[in-house]
Amino acid sequence: MTRGLPELRAAIDAELEGWLSETLRGTAPIAEPIRYAVLAKGKRIRPLLFVGAWEAAGGVAGPRAGNGARGLHRVALGPELVHTYSLIHDDLPCMDDDDLRRGRPTVHVRYGERAAVMTGAALLPLAIRAVAEGAARLKLPDPVASRLIGVLTGAAGGDGMVGGQLLDLLAEKQSVSFETLERIHLGKTARLIAACCTMGGVAARAPEDTVDRLTRFGIAVGLAFQTVDDILDVTGSSSRMGKIGGRDEALGKATTPSILGLEGARARAEELGCEALGEISPLAGADRLREIGCLVLERDR
Ligand code: GRG
Image (cartoon, rainbow, N blue to C red; front, top):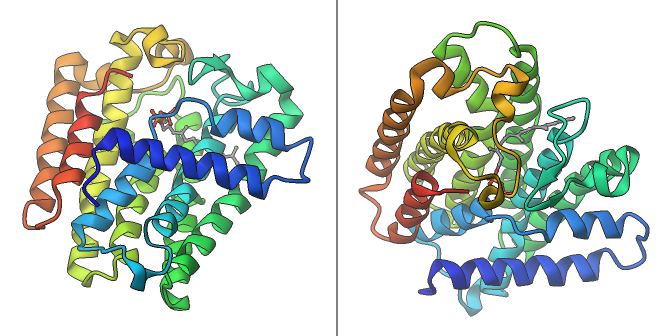
């Protein structure tokens, strides 16, 4: 698979669109807000990381792998659907209370709060279904498919994204140490990003030391991702980001720039980026994964 990132992103978008159309048939009225949230212009970093990690782990899609790339892209939808659910719930009035996301009104602004809660909830089972279907297409044995689901659900749960989000909310307007801040970032952001990388290694049936390496890469990239997000909340353009900036300060959130200053935060992002790239340097097929890692660090939205 030698396509560039824009082509890969387009292939993932096409899989999302096609699969949702097929899967949501007969599920009106929840289908509309689901499509609205998922098909909005996200950067698709998590599915890209999954495919990049799979390649770095030596994954090969061919006739012997069943439907090859289609199966791979179907699995890649799992983390994106979990991520989209987290954005919908994160934007709710009882959470961060945001009106704009991915360049358009948030789901609760467009469809109401009750529909937004249910849209988020509906995305979780869809995510598991996408991973299970993709694993079947790749002809992965059941224990490998179960492990993929275990990695994704583990990262999304109380010990990962949901737990990190609660810590984040509890820390509002509190004085927080840098160590505590990074523990929050690990839970609310980095665990899901790392799960994409772990899943890439698992789906490629790579040796365990490679899977561990990809997980460590993912954690460093995930922490860097949140650090850059905190920086952009201070310095970024709202129209470019598709969401309102300055929200962290308004909500009294501890962030990397609020603790280390902007320059300190930039240095921390760079340090994490180097750590991440160091982890995958021994892997022969890691060019795309490296490119995605750099994209995370250099992004402006
Ligand atoms: C309410 C049960 C319940 C759970 C909520 C809301 C939540 C769980 C977790 C929040 C996790 C969260 C939103 C972390 C922030 C991660 C982050 C920086 C998201 C932005 O990701 P991008 O930039 O977004 O990849 P796009 O739109 O490009 O996909």
